[in-house]
Length: 228
Image (tube, rainbow, N blue to C red; front, side, top):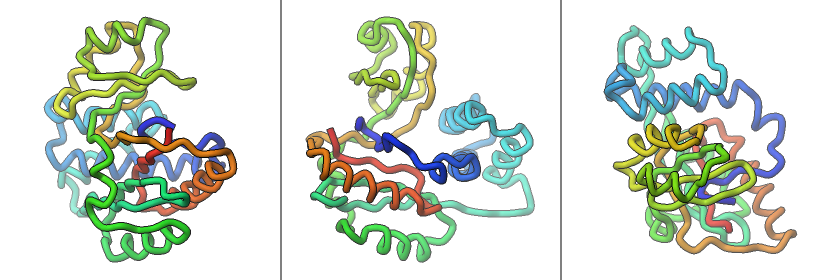
C-alpha cells in the first residue's frame, strides 16, 4: 500500500475530476497564505504542479492562488485538522482534512469512523514517521537517483517509485530528481508507517471498503494507513 493509501480499484466517484479539483484548490489556497509567488513558496509550487498535471484551467488555478493569498474580496479560510484512529482489523489510520468548518468535519469523522475506532491525538501517530513523500516515474536506477538527489529511502512499486526525504529536503530533492531520469508526479509532506500490517485478502477487502467510504467525505484531503 505504501505510505499513502490508494485503493486498487478506485470508484468513479472518487476519481471524479470535480472532487480532485476541490482537493487541489484547497491545497493551493492554504499554500498561498505563505505568499503568492511559487518561486518563493515551495508548497505552493508543488501544489501548482499537481494542479497542472490534473489539467486544471489557468483561470481556476490563478483564482485559487489569489483567494488563498487574500488578494480577492472573497475570504475563505481552510484549516488543517488531523484525525487518528483505527480502520477495521486494528489498522492504524491518520486522516488529514482541510476544512472551513471544524464542527462539520468533526461530526463527519465521527460518522466515517463507524466500523473502525476514532482515537485521540497521538494515539497512532507515534507509529508513523513524518517525511517528504515524492511519487515519481522513470526507468533510471532508482537507488542511484535517491543517493544523488539526497533522498533518505525509496520504495519501488508497480506505479513507479516513492522517494522518502527529510521534511526540510522535500523541495530540493523533488527539484533534483528530473536530472537523474525521474518525472516527479507529486511531492508532499506526509506519514509513513513504521510497522505496517499485512492482512489476508478478506480482511484487506474490509479495510479497503472502509477507506473508500472514509474518502467520500468532502473534507478529507489525505489518508495514511499502516498497511504493508
